[in-house]
Length: 469
Image 1 (tube, rainbow, N blue to C red):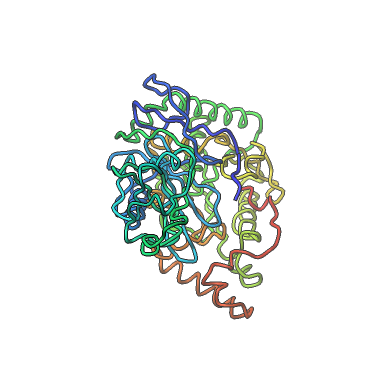
Image 2 (cartoon, rainbow, N blue to C red):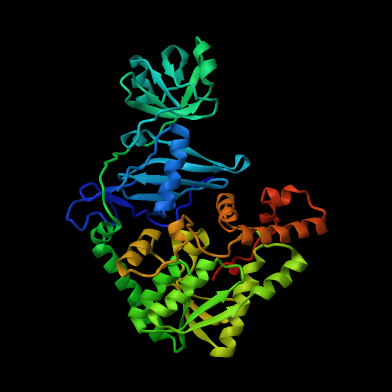
């Protein structure tokens, strides 16, 4: 899948402070260097649950964890048939983790920089000194004549480290033969080496508080611009102001900016009936923390009524946003004010559609709501550094490894996330699977329509405005 360029990639690194920085100079005064991540480059902090998962994946495969204690880590989601995330450590992409739906497992895909932080105890090959240069400089494959040793656990298709006789990493790649076969080969390819863009990886401990300090001027400027935007929009339009609050990080950052610009305004929370328990708790926490009025509207009954007629929503048939969010909001605004201005946590780095969106707009399905996006140009790292600085009550689901907050069964979620949700919330997911199974039987669909997540695809071209909320 091709990378999507949704805006300038701002991610850089300070080797003195060992933190990510969003400008060419760190708060400590030192120059920073570019971190070459795959577009769109909307990297996010790795929380302890993310780090535990990454280390478990690497340890299961290579016998050694990747991330040492005390290091800051970023995850950068990249285009993939399901889910793949680059791991940024020490200012370099040191590898990726990728979910394989057919096998229901994650695989690690290391880069040579990973060897700065770990030493593989299994799934490695050792090559003769004469082969090292061509492997490093040309990305040459490991050939049978140059093979010195191969770990017994290596199987065809495995990711492996390529080491020289001294145990120094010469490269990485994918095995083309298992260990037993490789030992019998006189010629032929043993490992197909993968060529990666090399980058310096500098070990060093830091905290997210250190990252906030390092990015102080960047975050101050981003806040100032967002506050000015809110003030100008509110002054331009004589409408009651609100914040559309979802329980996610972007709407929380928007709430903070709006309060600093124009003071307290009501929150609009659309309860689809498909939210995580933690999301309901976060709405309550934000209401209590900031003393705000929360106007709640439910789209749950409308969802199940539509489901009974049309079946589940799909990636390319997302009737759910219109039925559960847009129409209930329209009715709420009509009854409460007639018309209002809503500040929404939309960011251009989220999708191509949002990148092209105006910062102030009206959705044709909710004409009585004027929407505005104060943090349109922020990256996910801007948002998180801002929330960390403000000590804001963000949804605890992020700390548990979920990167997006919404309906628990959103068809746009990848299968890796759905697998995780099914394990964590067996009651919620079991009830949803029962609904899917009932629809499958009523439509005489194959079993894999449910078991392989095929209900997520329908084949209809979506109405783009269904997403613009």
